[in-house]
Length: 268
Length: 268
Image (cartoon, rainbow over all chains, first blue to last red; front, side, top):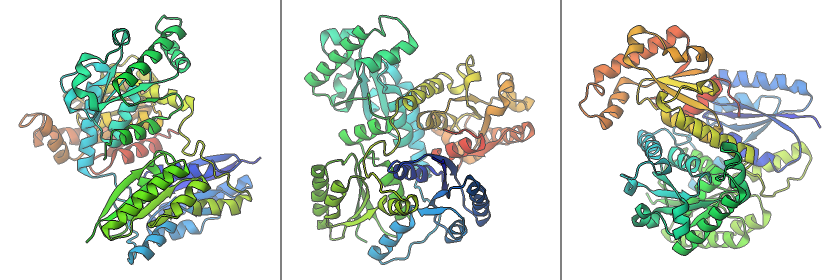
């Protein structure tokens, strides 16, 4: 089967065009080759993209062109391309124009709502907080945390916390569970006052074994037995202490983060 | 003006529904109150959302309901809600069905394409790399970096690097420019072999002054004069060394990251 070129054309970062476009593409069979075209904000830039799309016609299959662009002049240029244009925004804009009884401004502006100073500052602070409170390094300011991720080593606490910080501005600390916590079946002392902010993470013993083996092959730490013990103990502990927790084995970082935000009622 | 409730209903994280929905909403005047409903994958969960939407009718304005759900049975339940349903996926699916001559599978699967093990491992490694190579802390493995963010203190290198790591799996180090670099107008020695991977960051002196003042108020470090000097020197240095750079002042972390990925030709 011929690989079909797919263009994601956006007046901003192109993340939304690509994410939503991929969601749609996964509903179909076929091979697709993605090309991301971010920050297309002028008619000239659009004309350059159209030229690239025209070149891609040489593959023999018509390219798909997912578009999130507000400016009508820029969109008009893109509409003239030889590919199949899939406008990801306009159908929704038309529905809202009818419901709200207004014409859409169709201006690029805070289109993706991501560039105000407060939001930037909050995320910068959250990343610093996550760096300082990674792996139980510092406990002084733990009281400021929105969430404290708790679980065995290598279940994904650090990347999940970083994702929460940099994408959502959530103050996320993380704290490891160690053998003493498993044997005593109790949460670390320092976390007791933070009960309502704790979110547990586990993964399957095999998954943990594989990840730990990359770091310390053939160690007791990475052994299947140790991983099984830790996962079983952590699960029992979370259940006994009534701490919400997720199994991270088959979840993406985005899914874990969304789950945590939802379960703890964090709203950004 | 009455605030209108807006529901973002998704069978996955809801990030796309909210981002695209907000893009559309910014085109209209009005006050909107967002409610995110992620992981709606069963008819029962959809019925619960419909009940919440029905309650929101009490505000006196019809709620807007942005939907990214693939399963027809779940969508059918949502279509029965009393709000204005804006389907963000179906119009594009119909265009592709016509072009590709296939029926869409309409199955939730890897809909948002984000949960395969390789991708997870890569992002986990990238976050670790970013932690170890933050602020020039370690230089041993700098050669493994996909990008080295360089600039004065507090221009946003750390959050941008973390965003690149956790969202794109990019190995991002960051390295500060110090007075000696400004006076000698040269890049730090250790970065010279990495020329092609360096990306510069500056911001406006006033912006830098404000951010630094939060950390060390009334210090020489935070003074407008020092900030002006550093920004001017860094800009001259980047230009002389032919290093690509961005002004981060009015850019979001997403925008900076997309710019860096595009300019350095990093593809994920």
